[in-house]
Image 1 (cartoon, rainbow, N blue to C red):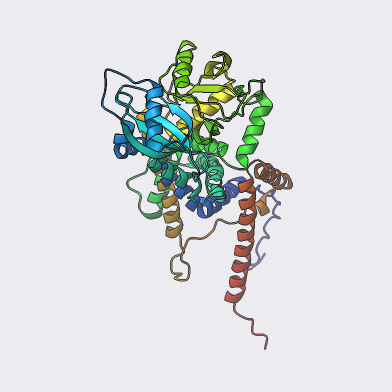
Image 2: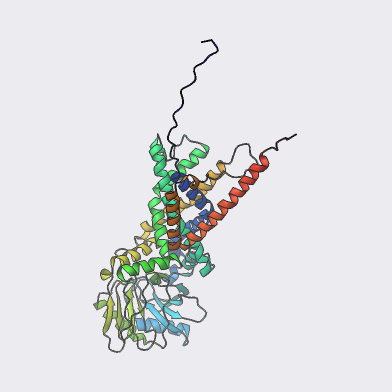
Length: 480
């Protein structure tokens, strides 16, 4: 053997191909695209929701004169208060409902149907129950009886004052919020399992700077606000146009939905809907209701345990139907009992007690009231406000992270890169499962289905652009 001879290396044994991770990158790509493209809708919904959480106090401050009256040792009958409101408005007013003053120091609302008002709106005259003085005259909205300020903020949150088409925005935000939150949770679990310092994913590390500091805030705030985000997403979907109908159909398949109060004296039931209790319109009566009957209906209701003080009395919507009186206390414990009373015989012809409702109906009512910030009063408002502000911060930080990740030395790149494709690394069963899940979610949450198609279109365009840039950047080969 000479010095130049060498031993040939032993033949290498081919190793089994290593399985590539694809599910985590897929979640990252989904979380990224949803955050970037749907983030503005979530941001607007969170900001307007934070403002709405403060409306009870704003309402009390702005409309203190209308909502309250000096305390008095005497109280006029409802008939006398109604007559004072009728005299104030004139003979053409159509009385639609009365809300007696809940407590001494509050005003009674005499509500009227009027031409020119929008759906679910009524004109409310606020009467001092002690003296009959007219304290105010406002247009109020829905069964929640929200004042113009609260209605304006609520409409902003619900549809951006764009009417029914605008509701697509809030449905898009509510539907994607839950998906983004779940994807973020899965990414957080993957990262915390691999992280050496796990506490950095539970609270921001003050030693970190730049992108890592933003990432620490994004992940830690996200995990602490997760349950609140999921709750707002789930309850917000029940209000939506398209997915909300699916939720109602699912509930009805379980227990038939919320029982409806029978108001037709021939035994027909009126429509029942938890959301209508907050935003639904009440039918205007076809004829003038006797003011004295309101006192009689209230007395009967008190004997039948509809006596929280927060009640609404509605005269018959048409001949052959009953008077209704129902509790409108939305705090906890919720009081939502209701009665239908024959105005001729003064007999109770039907009743619904909140305690007897199916569990799904109770959960729906509690969820709606919790979402509106009224179930637990001021504490409920504070929690909702903090969750909303946290969601605003999450969106803003997410965009800041995208900005921070822009390539160094590339002035043509204004923002960060997009996470790479993941499904090309997935096995056939993974692709099939993802496609099936996308179809099911798209059917259940239609706005998600539409935007998923949009995401795929954006993804395709980005790929074409990247390939075009890559080809232009490769120098031509000299073939001489």
